[in-house]
Image (tube, rainbow, N blue to C red; front, side, top):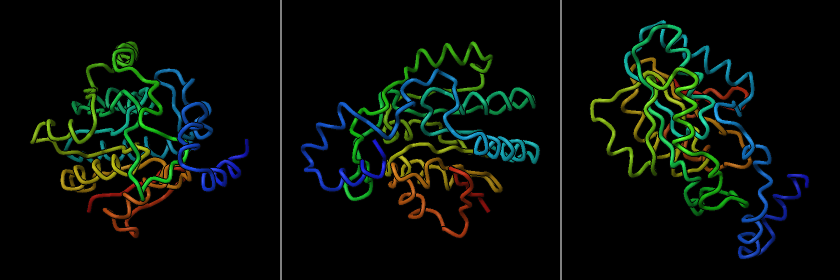
Length: 229
């Protein structure tokens, strides 16, 4: 079904019917559930941009570790870890995810007609750990399972970062990630945000521009990035 008509239907159907439909049919992520662990879901252009910026951060010796909010099946975090290995960096990557799907949407912020609590619960932390070992990056990545509101307060207080990737899909997760990250990013550190232009995840853009100056956010391809000044 054409996505244009899906969104029209989403606006006119009663909430109860939308809730019933989205439990059995989700047109927004037709191929994501079939992705293998370690497979990349973003465009080649976006990935290349992110890796170029990571090389730049590392070669400029920006202090701090790396962190990813929204790990899913590990496609991006594995690529980041391989760069660390290539450059013999002693930095670690912290990967936060519920590993149980999306949290509930935030009313008035997330216009996600066919998503519900638990959507995208296609990843398993134990399976991902095995894939990390298989890719020889298990010692570079620290996976942390749970809702951000529960896991962020438990992170080591001394953590600070040179590079971050926020792929939370929803308003609240993006908001919580940015609130935590902004004061902990070192000078010239970079935060990448996924889905900022997505019609499926409008809450992401709302959260980003509540916490970041729009003039400082650069949108390229299907991602955006912000540099700590």
